[in-house]
Length: 380
Ligand SMILES: Cc1cc2nc3c(=O)[nH]c(=O)nc-3n(C[C@H](O)[C@H](O)[C@H](O)COP(=O)(O)OP(=O)(O)OC[C@H]3O[C@@H](n4cnc5c(N)ncnc54)[C@H](O)[C@@H]3O)c2cc1C
Image 1: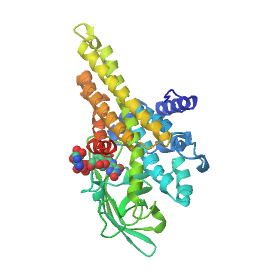
Image 2: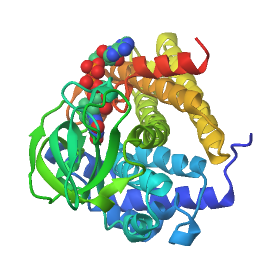
Image 3: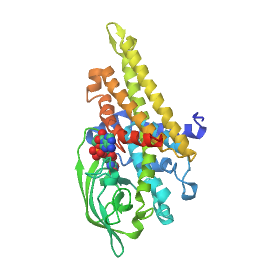
């Protein structure tokens, strides 16, 4: 394994830095967080810069970069702003990955080029009121019609659903089925008749809106199906494996930026005639924070490297998500302690890192469930 950056990766990351400095500098991140701006205007900028084309094959007009490179982009976007990375991964992972692996040629050729240009937005709708960790407990159903399907049910906590062009919806297409069997994934235009959305409020990730979606006999055509009818759980698990490695990379980026802020403060802040960084308790805390971030970074890169090689890595993707989300929470918890009143102030950034980070250990599959998955992969 060699994780030294290639010239191409260095150029891409420099490009990310330039774009973020221009379009999302720290004062703009603060402004957008305060106004709950969804930042969706950034997608076109990503598209024009070629960032959205990175994971897709050349035959569709993509760049065909490996997964590790895509994760490096997620990490660097997360370093600048968590919303910048979330916007990127929501579209690439939740829209692009299921279409690429399971879509028909027509779906891929019609939708992926638009996604790469930043012209299409996607949301992933799996969670329901009684199907959170137990995703296989979902009850939203689609009944067969003459021309396709009619979907009835309700989805909860769906990110950016209000601005999506398409909702990737998991539902039961086999009457009487239970568990993982009989689930299908349908690509539903957000403006289809019968979709009602209510916003949900939350403590962090303000730029990423969350929605309760009612699906009241929403009709879609037969070609809305992604993958085989009744085999949708494979599509869901494949998609989540990608999104978990993105979550890990984002978490590493956000953790590093929070740590850098705590370090800056510790070096500048003088109490009792000394830099607070000179007190051993603070120095050691910063060391432990950096050590956890480095551990998370290498384990995430390892998962990305395995994915790039096409090696099965359910265990490593789950481990990366667990280690990185917990490193992020460790860093923001201690970062708040080190920056104290400044960190707690709404004028600073630490409070935002701290609020945003809380999601990472349960979003996209709780860490308890990830540990169960790892245990199974270990043969326990
Ligand atoms: C801001 C935000 C954005 C989200 N975005 C999306 C989205 O875009 N699309 C989408 O589909 N979903 C989304 N979700 C939903 C998210 O994926 C779920 O919150 C998550 O899967 C956990 O489900 P839950 O909240 O219902 O928790 P629950 O399943 O009720 O779990 C509660 C607690 O019980 C534990 N637990 C449950 N079962 C077990 C078990 N067998 N063993 C041990 N512990 C267990 C859990 O680990 C957790 O600690 C989002 C959620 C949030 C908050």
